[in-house]
Amino acid sequence: MRDLIILCSLAFALHCTSTAYVELNGNNSWETQEPHINDIGFKLVPRFNDKLVGIEHILAFVYPAFTFLYLCTRRSMTLSRQFVIDCATIMILRSMTIAMTILPASKSCSSNSWYPIVGGCYDKIFSGHVAYQTLSILYLCRLGFSVWNYLAIPAEAIILLGLREHYSVDILLAVIIATLVTCK
Image (cartoon, rainbow, N blue to C red):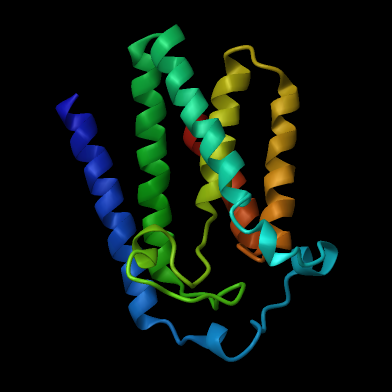
């Protein structure tokens, strides 16, 4: 249990450090203009009303929370432990990719004192929303839950693209990485 706490603490510390690094070293292009990245997802999905901001967190939170609780109450602790290790692995991989490339913000943003820790104003390669949701759905479907749950992944992608929370490449890489993390 102690090694699991250390791993999760390390993963979170790396995430906070990489996100803060991006916030401090970005060019604030979001303050003056729209990003100049040609994103096919932005062309295919119209911009959503800003009143919907926050809805993208619902699916991204509900699936991992439900998966963890289900694994803790219905299944073995071994599977719960593996799920937490996979989440920490994704967080560590994401922290490395965040620090390697600073993309312009995919939307307008105003930074505040806590935002760099949990998100920030710059886009992140790869989407944590989609990675954790995909990981959770893969676990649930392997445990016998309906394959209809897979439809939540494109639904989250459309929401993220419509709100301009992530670029298409962030979403695609999140699905690929989450799938590879679970395929060991």
